[in-house]
Amino acid sequence: MDNSIFPFVEVDLEWAAHHQWQAGDAVARGAMRAYTLWLVLSGELDVNVAGHTRQITEGTLLLLPPHLNRELSTKSGADWLSVGIIARIFGRVDLLQHLEVPAQWTPPPAERDVMAMWMCQIVAEWVEVATPEGKPVLWKSPRVPLRYRQPRDAVSSFISAGLGHALVGMCWRMLNQEAVKKNERVIALETPSWLPRTIEQITREPGTAVNELARNAGFSPAQFRRNFHTWVGTSPQTYITQRRMEEARRLLIVTDLTVDLVAQKVGFESASYFTRLFKKRFGAAPARFRQMSRYVHV
Image (cartoon, rainbow, N blue to C red; front, side, top):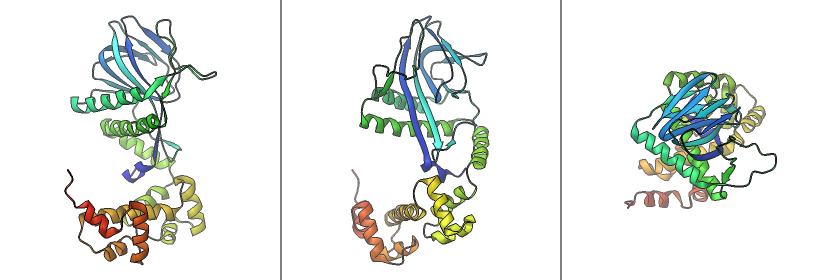
């Protein structure tokens, strides 16, 4: 899977909680609706999954798939974070389903601390509320009370979503490279073969015309537009224009090409039309944008 697919990864968080357990606390839980990411901050957690018990110690992460039952307990107490994650490409293809999960690993301290900070911030953006009628309860045991949490407001939801994307990206980098390669092969089978190639071509050559993309994908222009919109959620022309604007922005910052040459390089025949679109997108005409971007940032 080419990295150009990652802008189309949608991440949803189902829960976020900070658990502070005393010695002897335990729960048993069936299948969940999301992948579970745990990070133990201190103490030790015993996790029984499919008959196999794992000891999750301080600084260790565990990623579990949704379908597995799990039993959790601690003999001496544990302080740990839990986040429920769903990650899909184009809202359809499960990004994590073919990784080697359950996955347990202890990252270097710097990376662990970053992930702990992100998870703590997500938890801070969520608040406990009364459990809605019919809403599944995430945790239930004699010693661990019923709890239901959700983002505090729209801003908290926005912050949580961004940090959720960051967590998925960090897990993707950290986990075994062979497992990642296996996942990429499976995703390639589940995603139409023409789509990653098309996205890659647009990224590499933002000046490519829609008709040429359709021809390379093996569709008529009308079929291509329908299929592209079905998967990406926007028309190919809109997506191409967005990519052209981003590439133009980059060229204005890192090169000394004239505005006319930048427009031509990203596929615009009319420099004046390019200028209008660029100003609408970034709030300044290309020449002015370049001037502002080269100020010393302090």
